[in-house]
View (tube, helix red, strand yellow):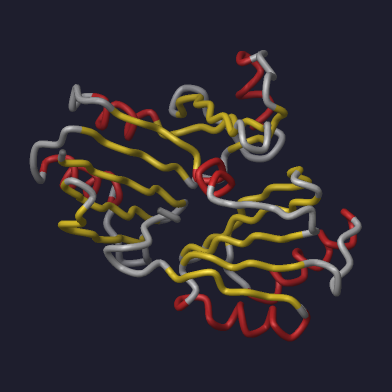
Length: 238
């Protein structure tokens, strides 16, 4: 079975083509000052037209989201709830829902309608998910106070978990290591996570974020790098 997996971040796109779980191709693109207009849209179209697929798996890491307890059913309020965290454009953003039964939470998130239509126009099975739900589903908690950090290029998402409950989730742009470190430390103080009692776990693009990790290690006693995103192997915590 030929599967196309797509990861959308705020400024980037990563895709992976696999056949029977064997990776055939993997590429990533990041917008920069020299990128043409609609750069990501063009790269998405290239990936979609590369070959015939049996299935497409889409993971959105766009930071337009809100976290709610499992069972919340007022779906019409989804846009309004997301708007508390980020500007929402109903005409151009599709409202989506991902449920995590493991930790009994659910995510409302939006996905660009033009990308949504391009993918759905393939007329093959498509699985949509939010990166926070996929990340959370890969985690386990042993009743400890833990911070789990998943790093992308120029972006990061993290969970604060205690007693097998999600205390906090956030998805942020990372343009300054100092600013982000300050935010992490400020967050710990607000939720009552002592720096010495909290265990930190780091995943994702660790090689591209070595400066951030080295700075974090100056403050954090218990830190473990779980794994880097090894090409053709660890794709989005698979």
